[in-house]
Length: 53
Image 1 (cartoon, one colour):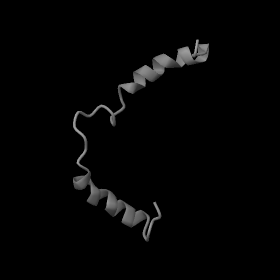
Image 2 (tube, one colour):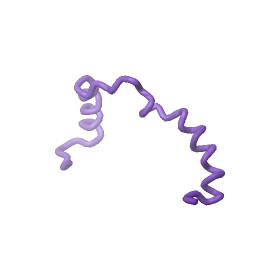
Image 3 (tube, one colour):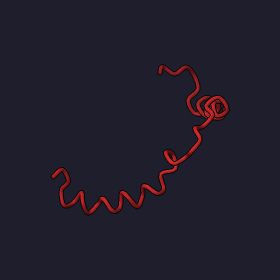
């Protein structure tokens, strides 16, 4: 058995909260090119300068 008694008790909660996972439930993948300017503006505003990725 891989789950402890505590794990089994928490499993119901995990399954309940999985319903609210908005990121993996979308049928269509986001258009990165369209979203890029929005996120780039946030990066420029809050993390000005050059980032080392």
